[in-house]
Length: 296
Image 1 (tube, rainbow, N blue to C red):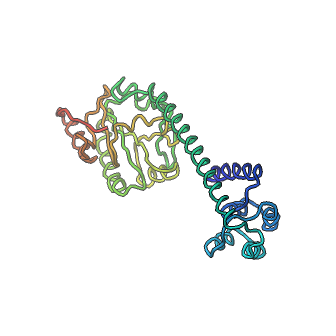
Image 2 (image 1 turned 45 degrees about the vertical axis):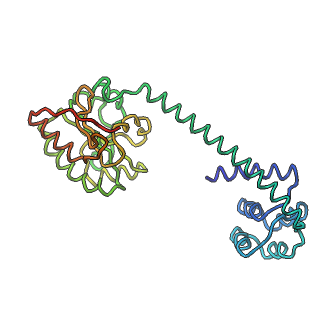
């Protein structure tokens, strides 16, 4: 945000120096916040004059920005003020310039967004979809990017941690999510019960936390025993989120062929992660699941 302020301010200084446009309250406040002294602004006012009014709200804004009593008094005296007609003309010119700068900034942001989107499309174009290459492809895709809590600290796991798995459940969750914190202890209990009996099964945590600290604290506080994608690598793995649905907590269960065989979302509706655990119990009991339709 500050960078944009400084860019806009730089453009403003350039344009005013080139055309010596009179100053306004907004410009004076910005100059004070960026290091100009009240004395230097009085000197600027003597050269460029003042094309604005000073009501109580504007006065408070300038005082908050660091204006001295001398500067406020000078503005109130009208010594630097233009005539009302000239002030109106300058205000129109400044408004037109501000609109032009805003349009330029908006065009720059759109161009940057388009570039980032193109980078993401190219990056994910070569990433494995869940049903292309199966768990072997997923294992390769996540190689060197998986961590696990060990003695309360995150540690990278062996690159072949997923290589022999036949069922992988991706767990989309976050510490800030109340329903997630309610469900996670149940998932921990479930994992500890079934994982020793079913070494072909694994859970991979995909964090929606806002920071690495929050993610690792969540894993530590809940004693998550399963694997997790390193927070620093999550942006490179966003292709996995396309199957997660629109809310959390969410579980997506994938078989050895990469087919999604159970999900918290089906037919565009939220079934919840408990349904996936029920489906897992059925699989472990040797029962076949019916064909399910999942929301992207």
